[in-house]
Length: 158
Image 1 (cartoon, rainbow, N blue to C red):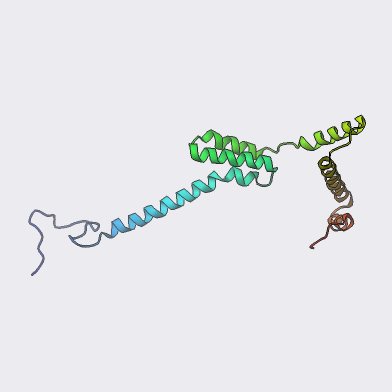
Image 2 (image 1 turned 90 degrees about the horizontal axis):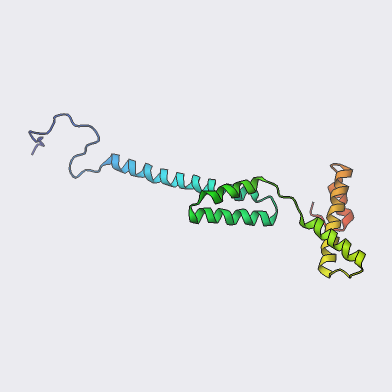
């Protein structure tokens, strides 16, 4: 039996109209493109959303944690102000107020004749060692790290 068009149907149909019972190729292609676009936009959104955390990763631990919490708040509350604050905080290098204050407190305790805590002595000696290492590196030039590490008694893996 030969197929015949309905007398009221136009004789020239566009290519995206399929016959009854056939697979609609255009719908399948559009569905695949739509799923791919949603996945790509979602990946871009999450990558952009973690930008402040990735920027703050190389900063101080406290600053990184604050930026991470702000990022989570922005993600779950959809309040973009948290994300902007986190981004600004990640871009700014906060000064280290803790080290000078600990050194001042230790000096005041020493002047007052109060014996320092064991934790404070360990922290101060570690800070003094790291400061001495940094000063030696700055004074000796590019070959300094190997020599300073060897002198400080810390085993080297280089």
